[in-house]
Image (tube, rainbow, N blue to C red; front, top):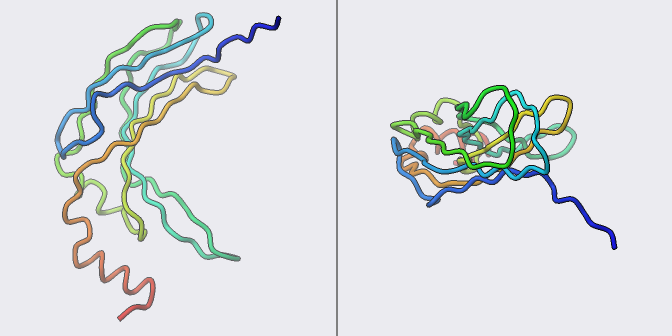
Length: 153
């Protein structure tokens, strides 16, 4: 009989997925490690991304980061299986936070990402999508940029 070692992992546990601008995302990072690991940091990140089409030798899709904020949970040290609480404050106006950089035709998607930064190895990561109210993102300037991009009248 061959025993497989379980894989090191991190899991983001959040009580809900729908948030409003200015709200705090509270949750836990659950580390499950086979053995203690030395790491540079345990971080949680709030990120907004938007997909957009690119045209160079064909059509492709690029992901543009339109908002990013990194929050350290614990600094350099030894990590073992444990739970770590975290809190992330969403921008007071999610729309305004992404408006300057959002230029693709796709919707803006928000993510909570966690990572254990292990030197000389792959980082242990997890990512959960959340929704943040973005009323008014499709304002008149966005619509005109969209029309110009696709040569619409």
